[in-house]
Amino acid sequence: MNVLITGGAGFIGSHLADALLRRGDSVAVLDNLSTGSAENIRALDGRPGFSFTHAALDDGPVLDRLARRADAIVHLAAAVGVHLILDRPTQAIETNVLGSHALLDAARRYGCRTLIASTSEVYGKSKAVPFSEDADLVFGPPNRTRWVYGVTKLLDEFLALAAHQEHGLPLTIMRFFNVVGPRQTGRFGMVLPRFVRQALLGQPLTVYGDGRQTRCFCHVTDIVRAIVILLDQPMSQAEIFNVGSDHEVTIGELAEQIIERADSSSPIRYLPYEEAYAAGFEDLRRRVPDISKIAAEIGWTPTYLLPKILDDMIDFERNRMT
Ligand code: UDP
Image (cartoon, rainbow, N blue to C red; front, side, top):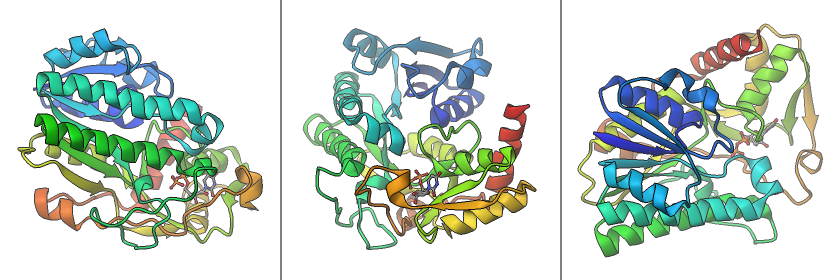
């Protein structure tokens, strides 16, 4: 299969490119290297079937050329990370909405099988834990930039579903929940790589709020396995799947476990939300996916438990720092 991966130089995309090349697919990566990095795909350069195009997602002629050759597209390119979204909301809206619109346009022109990455953020501040795919979505007011990311990704879902309904685009939507693993960077706010780095540098681990908020972390290897299985499905119906782990941990416990597993003497520093983010930031107390749909339909469940995830990330970060 010829697969186009947008955002293929990013954290998830580069792992996916590697897995697809290993199973004999051809992979074209499109990335503007804004949050992705050439380093992530350096090892793929020169592998048979691999190509890289450095261009923006809304570059029509480039998209047309790549989509024409693709049997399938995995659309991962997006503005990601809480800090980036809060600092530059206009750029986030443009990238996520206009970029996806251009991509979907090219995909439907050539009837490419299309997998779109969405996010747990589309559930907003819903309290209906665990979140199931057909649950109501609950956002805060628009003067809280917190909700920009979720709303733009939700609009992507609507655009994609419309392309399926009006043009028969073969489509699957994946709502990822806190994907973590080697190559992820903490620069844009993600908690796990930040804590691992802080622990290895002997700096305080900065827990925001009271640390009793929870998340479920899923290893990128499990996520890639789900994407690869979904790529091979018929896609006659446009389905939405939660993809993530349902093993819940508080952020405070996470910090403690990282300190222990990294053999670090770092203290934990609790930071009020007002100091960590702009005033009025609303954090989510609990975020847990209901993964019964993907388990029933393709037999996928995550295999990495938290201790293994942490060890993997600690090892990776240690190597990167030496
Ligand atoms: N968080 C934290 N310290 C950090 C970064 C994040 O305590 O240095 C918290 C954050 O407030 C949230 C959780 O960790 O409650 C997960 O944050 P992240 O940005 O990784 O993902 P998301 O909020 O999108 O789930």
